[in-house]
Image 1 (cartoon, rainbow, N blue to C red):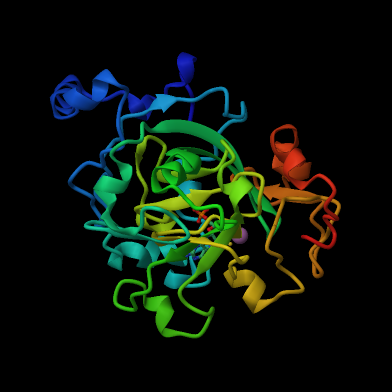
Image 2 (cartoon, rainbow, N blue to C red):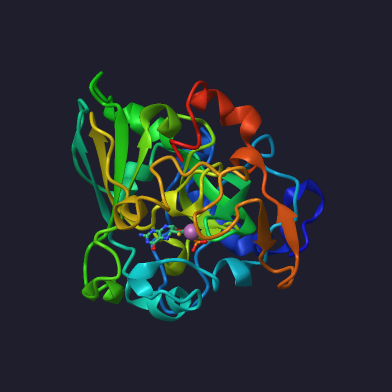
Length: 315
Ligand SMILES: Nc1nc2c(c(=O)[nH]1)N[C@H]1C(S)=C(S)[C@@H](COP(=O)(O)O)O[C@H]1N2
Ligand SMILES: [Mo]
């Protein structure tokens, strides 16, 4: 999709009526910047997804041309809906992303179960265009809409014992039919070290291309850690836990020799079954490959987190 000057996509231009009604809806929030209130209607039936209010964060965005919306929403990994790239788009209509709640547990002053609205309300949304690199050696460039995970973590006041953050996907075989089969140990879980979770690049995402996330991309709330392989970016989160011990993470449990806890994008450490030196660029044809960058191109921002660590051992 073509970008207009100022980084505005043609699809972001809303009819005046829509803009005006949204304005009155969000009047309170607008004074202090747009707040993360998801529109009421959250379609799972293929009708257009509601637009979000957000500011464009160009400081944290790459300059590359984003992958098309069609590719981002039809070439997915979401094993709860099947193992083929085309399965999630076809099957994820059974997920009901509203109403939704998130349980916060563990080593924090404030814990409990919260409506998604209450989780999101204080957080202004930003659009950030990030590189996305899957461990299977393909990549995309994606305009996410979300807010820093760090801002959410601070609200729950983790204690000094909280060394890690664990994220859990919904476990409900009625909404996620793939969970009936032992493809992975369900529910899908992931984790970050606290300093990774607090890094300003780490996002909680609610939208894509300016609209509410489609189910196949992890509605209504998913993680994005742009310097790590895609499997760290857990989808449809229902639980956030603060832990003292390193959490288990699904792909490491399944194949510990192939997938580590850190999963930092690293062209110098190959997967046991394939090279990580280059990547296929989705949307540019089967043969368009480009070199993979250390920490997926975010080395200046994140390399200090791993100073002194042997990245071959902690892969
Ligand atoms: N719950 C859950 N989260 C998940 C996965 C999954 O199968 N289940 N797949 C992961 C993998 S391997 C990748 S590459 C990304 C894909 O995100 P996308 O489909 O939005 O591009 O989601 C990650 N998060
Ligand atoms: Mo992936």
